[in-house]
Structure formats: structure tokens, C-alpha cells
Image 1 (cartoon, helix red, strand yellow):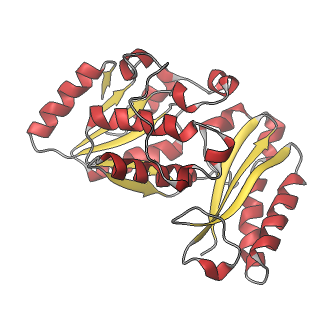
Image 2 (tube, rainbow, N blue to C red):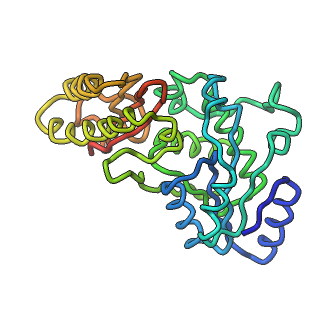
Length: 284
């Protein structure tokens, strides 16, 4: 596994592989890797001739400076975890390599991300998805992947990235991959490492309540299901629901009736203490 630090090194590798007609699978990450990331890497390795993972904590997608400062980082542990995956290369650049002109006044333009970027995370984290689009577009420019792999825990992010590549004319296939969970149901996340032992003990309650709501939804309205989930989760110690939205899986707009859309997903963000956790569940 090659460790690459500069954009020039990466472009050299990609150029050679592209000239040889090789497909490139790409997994963008912010590090603090776990088994969820590894499942994406394993699929990228299996599907492609060449596989590349990026490790880069992107400052432009954090609207809360404290969140950026406390985001978990352990580069050497990440490298060790990736070493046995069959990965071709890991790209671990500095901020200057990704944003040569600096992070202030950095945008060439505002990305056209559509309405999917204005709801849920877009509402509560202003500018977040512009930052996500910016770094993903830059990484796609450098890696030129055939396929890019994203976990479905970030359900809204996948929709935003699909809109971004369409509006920017980027030729890459987006591969969504199922949520990976601990045995107790908690969705794997780098942020889980920030939970105290007491918070970690109760955090699986998020998924438990969502799972229980599937049966409840069969005989109750969308509004009643929404209210049940919020009430049950906020009854768990340390928990505060920032939002829970039951939405059309294409538009990500809220639905009022189960019959409104062919596919419906419940997307939730919960603060467990100071740690912000996201999850989702498919109702139909």
C-alpha cells in the first residue's frame, strides 16, 4: 500500500493507471477509520483494478469550529487498519494540497446542489454541503475515479453528491453501501469514539427506537410515528433530538402520508451529550 502526500504524486499514479486502462475505485474519508469504512474499502478493492482511499479532515464542511477541533484523528492507526485490505494507495494530504489558494475565498462558484441540500443537515448546518461538494469535487478531480463508495448512514450526503456530479458533469458512478452497525445496533461512526462510557451504553437506543417504529408505523400516521420516535429517544439519558424527518427518499422532502411516495426514509440527528450522531431507517 502506497502512502501519498501530494496532489502531484497522486495525479502521477492515476495517470499511469488510466493509461493502462485500469478502473479506479475511490473511498473518501475523514479518517478515524472503523469497520464501516473498511466495508467500503473492501468493495472498492473487489470491484476495481486500482483502489484509493483519502484521509482528509475537510475544514470547509464544519460550521462549528469546536466540532472541527475535536474531530477524532489517528493517522497511524488508520494506515495500520488499511494495510491488510489490498488497497493500492492512501492519499493523506495537507489542507494546502487540497486548497492551494487557502480555505478563505476558496470557491470558484457555488455548487448547484438542489433542494436536497437545503433540508435536514442543510438547515441545521449552513454551508456544510457546499463544503462537502467542494472537497469531493476536488478529490474527484485528482483521483478521477471510475466508482466512488459512500455509506448510507450519510443518506442525505449521497443525494447531494449525486446532484453535484450531475451539475458539474463529473463522470463517476456513485456506489451506496449499507450501514454497518455494532452488535448492539449503534451505527458505526468516527464520532462514537467521543462518547463517554455511559453515553456509549445508551447510544444504541437511537437504532432500537427507529426499529420499533417500523411496526408502529404500520397502524399509525406519519405524524404519530414521528412524535413517538422523538418522545422515546428524548426519554433516554443524555439524548436530545435535533431533528427527525420522515421524507421521500428521492426529494428528501417531508411526507404527510405513507402513500405519498414510493420510498420513504426516516432521517435523524441526535445529540448524545455533546456528540452529534446521525442515523436513518427505511419505512418503505
